[in-house]
Image (cartoon, rainbow over all chains, first blue to last red; front, side):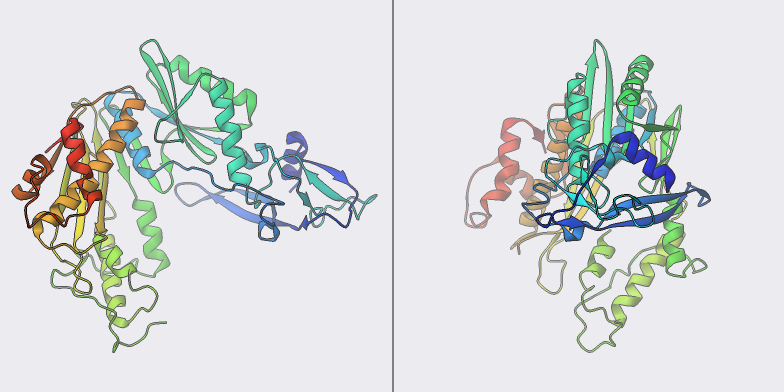
Length: 269
Length: 166
């Protein structure tokens, strides 16, 4: 929790102001989560302060909330393209990404439970940057990253707004953004390094090395090709429905299968 | 994918028969946990789109289902299986609509690849119905096809422009 609050201080997320009756103050809450790696082992415990975004009023507390994310097809296309051109893709993760997004509206939140200021217990925080749980958080983050990359000479994809491209002579660097996960790869190692350094200067990032696990896809990049599998996801799904030891079947559905609303059937609800 | 979509249509009021079908999908999944997609390197970069459809596959409202997939070189990039939005009168029409959605996806991939710095021209689109293929080339409107909605003629336009060929 302290780590999270330090993160807030470092990003200059908020300032303490006295409460007035005009403000629509949004509650905050701690959320705890255990982070798992690709084998399902707990890597670290995480505490995150979130705003109760459902108390926000449209027009006052937020305007636009839409933010683009990469399509899975785009990710596969990028993988196939990278593979054929013989370069590897890397992955990075922006720490507390949403805390980087500047906020345009005036939003006030309560002090975090358990960490109230002793001198001013009735004060509220005025947000400078977005907080997790706010409706506009993802959009503001995307906006910030977008502006940052565009100012560094990247071009945005014509149809895919989450793809950023920079060309230098015969080399090219491709960057695909999925909220705070960033996949990138380049035909030239130097371009990659430049990108990482630029990102490190602007945001706090953690490098995850080569792309091996992304959105439930297990990826293995070899020299002569790339494997894509969802073994872990499948197994979790089976576990969830208690079907780990069920018999295998070769087809997902019988050819003569006929489904309708089945008015007479027993209800399963 | 088709079977999952079919089951999902009854989510609001699930009955036992739907439950059995859903369980069968999970059993199938158990058998395919080790199957992976393989993207080999060092093959030519060309995009091919395939499209197919069934005719009046849905027994309830008699709409057809279109299925498409796209291969870049020999790696599978995108696929979909979707119930069409309207009822059709002939197999050719169903295939024609499937080819249309295949074409739309091809164009998206083409655009994406041009952002990567790879320009493709004339994306081959494979369709297994001769009259549907002829429909895209020949703008003759005879009695059996004149009811086809304008939006489905989208593909014809792109064939004329040379964006794709069938």
